[in-house]
Image 1: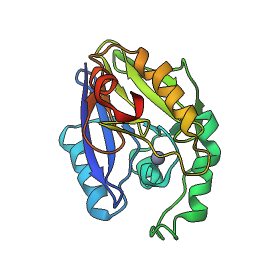
Image 2: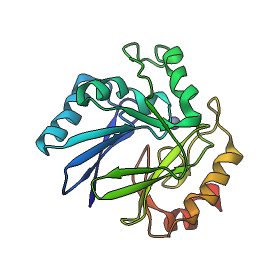
Image 3: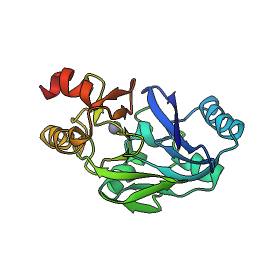
Length: 213
Ligand SMILES: [Zn+2]
């Protein structure tokens, strides 16, 4: 079984996820937004207190607030970075604007693996399916655990809102199409974990999200 923990890091209040398998104690870290030493220490303390073995670093997309801790996580836990194949450029460009956004200490990290829709991420005996959900970023992906009925959806869908589409590579119609065709085809009870803010469910957003009426 997969257990989910998240931390809210950096001035963008980005949610950093640590998922672990309760039997093998293997873990994956998704979108590490940790930037300050305090944030890095908080994440490391959780991993060591639970005695987790971090096996992979995953990014839903390559925006700065989701990747600030990539280089640190790779080194600290000796893991490789997986990102959607069409978001390689988004990740690479962070270096060019990190200082302007107030993160002069940002250290870029190369992606080691490019993943695409239909790929499976194993975590102990559990698996997550990769969904391609572009719009907020051109290569945005989400991680869907069918058995436990949750999706780690990055910045596509938020509780009562959707991801912004005014950043380079963003496109409003594409985002709406991704949500309607991919996320809204999941069961209503599916718990949606977001890149910012609290979790929600597919059913709640179908009913109440003003962008998707
Ligand atoms: Zn983003």
